[in-house]
Image 1 (cartoon, rainbow, N blue to C red):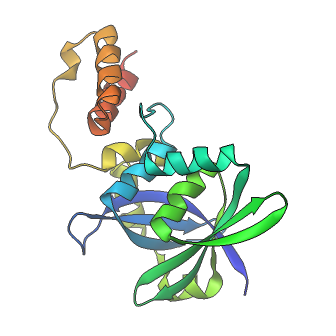
Image 2 (image 1 turned 135 degrees about the vertical axis):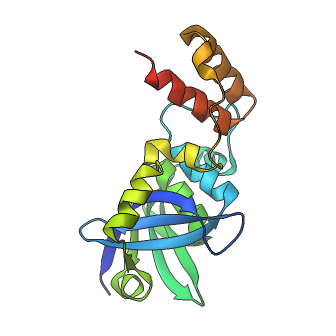
Length: 202
């Protein structure tokens, strides 16, 4: 069976499960998308890995996996979403150590969080994409873009929209101080808001 490479299109709130998120994967050379329901922790972990400016002061679980693998010279070469049973996706990590390839079973949300950290490609079989893939309508694509689901903005998307918190009254230096404090306290939603305010400044 042929494999199709996927890329992360965005994360949005799940319309079917409370407290869950829909991770939307998109085929590299096509218009089909593969929505996968994941938990809040995994959504946050994926968003943080994609975020360039915010680094947690302590490693998250998937960061720990990456550090452990690096220390023992294990490389994650790719992730394959290989099965779909009753709406549940099954994935494998294709790893290499000392020239020997190993396949490790993983939850799809964990596999993707790890793939982002290793910059490993994500694949699925064409049969799965034909079975569970959907074509986003133009209005839905625009809605996703308007919601700020581009990778660099996903962190903001992981919380309910907030009213303006009044960051405009602070100087740039005060904002940077608050950003550092928010990251140190692992309050990533607040850190993302402050970062966005900083980016608006001239």
